[in-house]
Image (cartoon, rainbow, N blue to C red; front, side):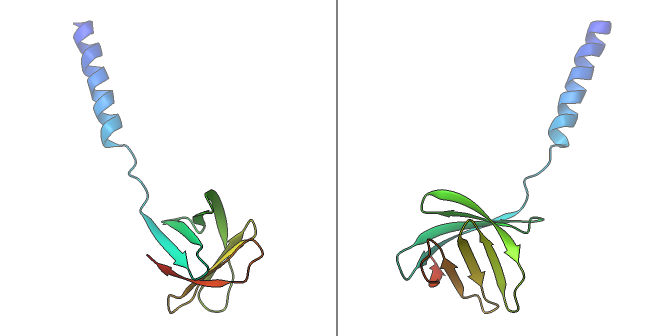
Length: 103
């Protein structure tokens, strides 16, 4: 009888683990192309104030910065700016800021 209890306990624990598994955080990914030919992917996750960028084949995490209008993220020499109207610009590799659009 103890063998059956052990099997039942194992199945119960497995089922509890499956049903209580945490769902993935909601996420948003956008691909942008800029006027100067730069292309990048940016990801945003719920409950995370950072922007996760892949630009020039390298992953970069940008911290959210204070700004008067819109949203600005920066880090590792890269600045991503999104205005309240939705206009997006990126500045990287000591280049001037350039306008970008979702593709």
